Length: 306
Image (cartoon, rainbow, N blue to C red; front, side, top):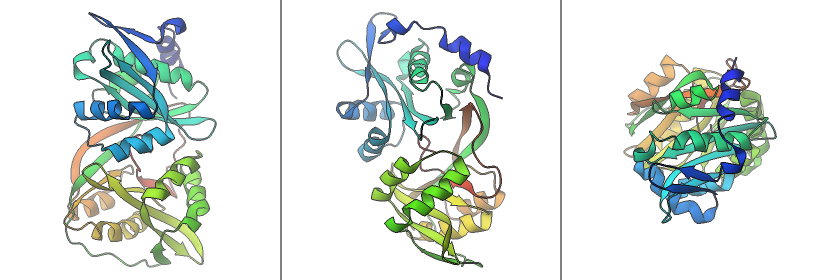
C-alpha cells in the first residue's frame, strides 16, 4: 500500500494561499504556470542537471502536460514540476528539476506539493532518481520497480523472425489497436500520448491472424533515438519488435528505458551496444496499475510519459 499517513502529513505543510511564492535564503521566487513561453526555461533547467533533452522533447512535454516553473526576481528559472494527465484518474509526474544550488532549500518539496494538489484524486506515478527518492517517499510514494536506462552506439545485430505472426510497419490506422493494448497493460487512458507520439515516431506491430498483439515505436530524442514505448507479452516478442528498429539505428546513438526485469531483454540490448548507463526507481501513489504478467510495457516512451 502507498502511505496515506505520509501523504497527508506532506500535503498539510503548505498554506494554499501562499503557494505562488517560494521564500529562499536571500529572496522570494515566484511560481508560475507552465506554457509555451516557458519552453526555453524548461530546456535550461534540464541542462543544469545534465539531462539530454532537446527543444523538440520539451515541446512534446508542453503539448501533453501541465505544471509550474519557479523563477527568481530577475526571471531566471530555478525549478520545474509537471504532470501529465492520462484519463480522469491517473497522471504521470515528470520534469521534476531544481537548480543544484537550491536543492537543500526545500524548493523541490514545494513544487512537488503544488502539482500533487492539482492532481488530488488521481493515482500518480513517477520515475525517481537517487536524489529525489527520499522526497517522494516522504510524500507517500512507494517503490514499484527499477527502470534500466540502456544506451550506446548500436552495433550490428541479427533480427529474429517471429515464430508466430508477422511484423509490419505501424500506421495511423493502428492507433485504436495500440491504444487498446496499452490500456490493458497500464490500466490508464494514454490515448493523448499516443496521438502525439504517432506524429513523431516510426514503429512496428506484430500481427497474428489479423490482430495486433504487440508494438514498438522509435523517435528522435536527446542525443539520438529512443526505442519506446514497446509493449509485448513475452521477452521473445519484445526482442522481435525491437531488433529491426535497432538495426535502423546501426552506428548511431540509441536509448531504451527497460521497465521489465528480463535477463534476456537486458542481454539482447547489451549485445546490440546498449549497456546499462543508469537506473531509476519507479514509484507510485495510489493503486499499482501496471500489469505484472501477460502484455507488459517493456520499454518506456520517456521517464515522464511512461
